[in-house]
Length: 196
Image 1 (cartoon, rainbow, N blue to C red):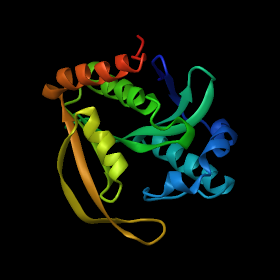
Image 2: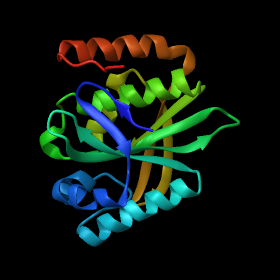
Image 3: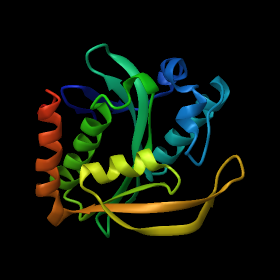
Image 4: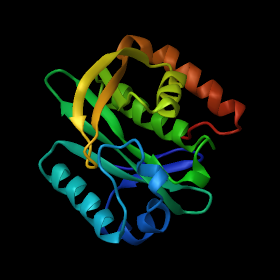
């Protein structure tokens, strides 16, 4: 499955994305607030391999994030923790190389994923989680129109040994029409807006 807008294309993550992801993704600042980290090409390969293994197990659907204008891979994101019986999923594991941050690409990528979740798969709920210390991520999630639900205290231990508190946000199906309008207005203001 590929999701495509005017600024971004989300294509299924593959092993042959490794070199392109290394070219933009070995910046330590990208991994500052993530539970895991990627410092070198070997760790990027392990990151891809873990994502693909979890996809084979049916628990995630990982994407490479591609800037449409250049065709360049600039990051990654995924659907995770799909619970078909409860009709919910998490959007996460999102990172975008710094030159493409705050360009509208992440907003459009989230729009495409949310639209797929609510309009194609007909889910009831989409969750977005972030490190409680990550103020920029929190602001971006709220900017989409998500609702902050609460704090999971001492939720996980990061790969560097820090005990992380995690903020939980959600968008539910009844809220999607208003959230969709809000995101489309933001994208239109940037001259973007998702295609198809």
